[in-house]
Image (cartoon, rainbow, N blue to C red; front, side, top):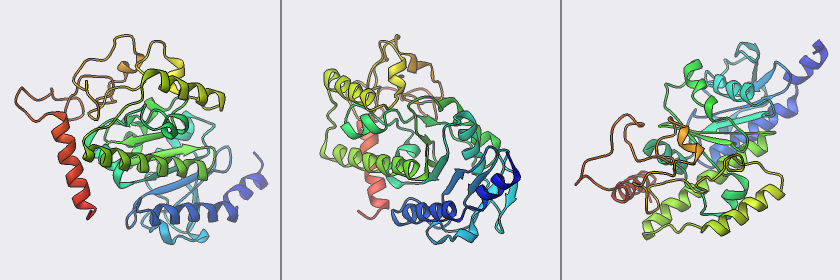
Length: 301
């Protein structure tokens, strides 16, 4: 890559302003309190613009934006780059078509991250078509390569958003707008799930209707992990539906993701390290109700 092209990428003020605009949206939606969250966009073979550390995403200016190479070494900017940019770079390396990454803490989706509860499928048409599978990456202390590498096993065709256990979410796409949309869609969905559970029941779509949505998704040109698995349980297991304590079909390849706690597996606790509670312990419905009440109380609802 020529020096001129390299310079034009990291000095592109329009792209820096776009990062600031996404930062304002994230902050105004309540997805990133205080200095939370970070945003990046790849501008060259080895150059990435990113938000700096210790700054409110709602009040950034183009002059605040810095740049790093694909190893995380800062190459431009007056402010220090965020330590969590390594997470963004790990995603970009694992999936070269990814150009933009948004990480933040949307409260309803983060509630699922704290509960380590898988995001169910086969409920809302928009989620089936525009998102699909949302895996849960295991917890690791934020910053550093160990944290960044937690998401790598889940980067595969059809996955554009990952929940970070006990932390938040990371969404990604071909541009910043696309990456941000995934976060907004996911948090709205998680809020709907929590509200529906308060009403007492979450109704799943049947297999025929779910397959119709997957057919539509394929016609629209979107990918989905379920397109690549034969005889797969379309919806997975979740504490939000009956049958959570039943074993998943052995034919489904998704069972082979050991760090995706709860998804198509018998329920476990403490990230899969501890067995399910003994007889007489609170059941999953009671636990979800308790979690919902605590989340709503914290939000002042």
